[in-house]
Length: 394
Image (cartoon, rainbow, N blue to C red):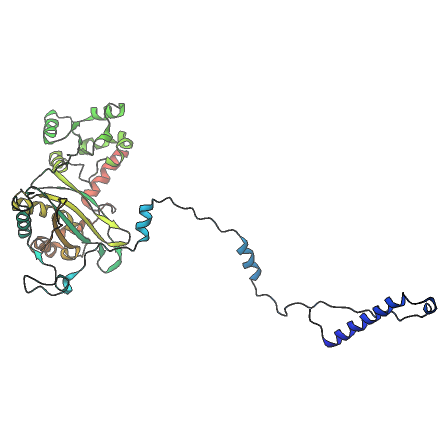
């Protein structure tokens, strides 16, 4: 504590008097009658260390700081996944090279000019020549198609379409090495002739109400079948096994409920499953890869399969979006290990004319589907499904 000059003098005088009193105790007896003045009384007041008040809320903040922070639970993650997340993200969306000019010669610097787009037939012939027995000697190599789509809603840059799954029937069926045909369970009306025709179409198990009874008794395991199709007349009886088949329950939206099951079974048996891949870091972009045949097939057969995929994908765009804005690009490559990866971009201009004409005529007939199977039911087909569900619950 700091003292003023007057306080210092007072303290020194007190110390002197106390020294005199201590000495008087050791003097001879003749000086015992000497009386000394009493020591003065001094009041030392403690002054505060600061002359200002604390700000409002300081004490409250200090008390809150003492509260222990909640421990964040650590989610288990494999080292491989953690390393991938720590690394900088590499965009999967193909670069838009339309800003570059077209090449004017056969030999050019690739990054200064636009990537060449080939007609579908030319790209297929190039692969056939490259994998000819006199070259790479893989004449039956599978041909893989990659489709890149833009999922942004028109005039709404912060809204994106969801992914989808589909089974596309190939006009020219093919079987690749290791490919297994899916198993199908069909619920048909009580008509022996119709059930026989369903078996002939490719169903692994077909029947009527007796199949439902066998599933309830455990004689048939419905989970072993990849697809379940049903006739509308037997759908109300399927409510007994809804909890068993769960996600495989037939619906109109998935085209597994139909009055004619034979074409649907053919589609599921000979079709190719596709699934649009999306990434949370790129919600505006999606893609999928699927085989469309082998190189030993004819070019018209491969092109018919290519058009089958476009006829399933392009109508999934949202209303108001042009086909050329929805499908960014398509590339062809051959799946063969140990060989350099050759890719050819397909010129989509002649293939999208069909969808552009539809859009001009009736306002994009295919876009009525909303571009997403997971959206709320709309349209006549989904209203039919609601009616069936109502009769089922009743």
